Image (cartoon, rainbow over the protein chains, first blue to last red):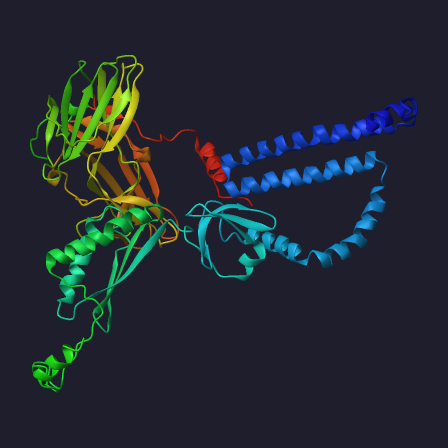
Length: 294
Length: 269
């Protein structure tokens, strides 16, 4: 009620004649019309760019058009309100120094973001690993990169962190290698085991014929003969390959009687073939007397 | 090439009555096609041991564990046509042993490329493609200078041969004649070759499936070889019939293709 009284008390004629009302309407029109139009134009630009270029490029164009247009709208609004652009720029220079000190981290993130954009270690849609976090890149923004983990959780990684840390782009190249270290018992025929692994790779529909699988006898381990088995696959087939080749190896090894041993220790005294000596240290009847006390 | 049955029979259009189930066997691929009142049903089975199997719209006894795919057929169309198609990815082929072409030398090699079977329904003037299935499952392979550049291809077990007489036609394989010419100043060592089937058509001639002829001219190790496709042989022979055009026919002149290539070059950002 009080506000209504105050509005009624305003001298509208004076406001209209002085131009305050028209200025206000123009500013409102700039904001109300300008911002939605700007948003529509930036979305259109994104759709047009996405047809020929990557999603990341389209996103960058959209943000560039929107923020650039936003600055123009802001300048027009300030000019409507009567602010001098020259004075504003002068003031901004002074304010910039103060803001620079206060916003060091944000500025560092922005500059890191520019480096990421120019270097392009990854794109939107890539799967990357940074530290313990593995996920799909959703967007590359001004201050941070947004990711989605495979358990559908959302992760925000500051750009500065990405520039400073080691980053792995899992889906950068069209094909990858699935590496497996396995061991076979010392008593097994290593050449036969290698041959079986080659057959498993050959029979797997997701394993590439070329590059050929890499199978190498790598070490005499504590409990087994160590074999490295690396098979190539198209990056989209990771789960299908992993879920099929591991059971296939186990099944074939079982069929061929090739043992994959548990970690174990063999004790022997002096000679491998001699029986292990056992010495009785206490009479059995004494043990019987002791056990009746329980 | 030895005498063989007419391997082009499966590719003729046929009419299926409502409620009928028919079997086609094209090499190792068995296709069960059933037409109900307003649906098409398709099931497939691969029998590797029956490489030369051939049956056209025969009696069908699909097993109970077979998986059917269904498509709506509101118009009640009863005409269907199977069509042979080049694989949806390039195919890597190899000679029996590496073959060297001295500078200036050339030759013709033959490959038998497994076809994809395309299921088309509807009248001749309004055919609709329902799906494509491979006649045989091919394994995947990579073709490129290293593991970072190249393309995903299929790998063929059968090899390139130099005598046409030793080519055994099969219902599910199209014979591809590859004319190689070495115009470089060094020998061309052929260990494997990638055939991109996007611009290759499939035709029927003398009861066999044939592809467009492919001519590859090798000029310089630093430059890609020139590849040309030709159907002249089939156009001249009135007994030949084009069964399927290329997946991606080459259209436009050289300038249009050059511009298309410029526009497709990566990202500008």
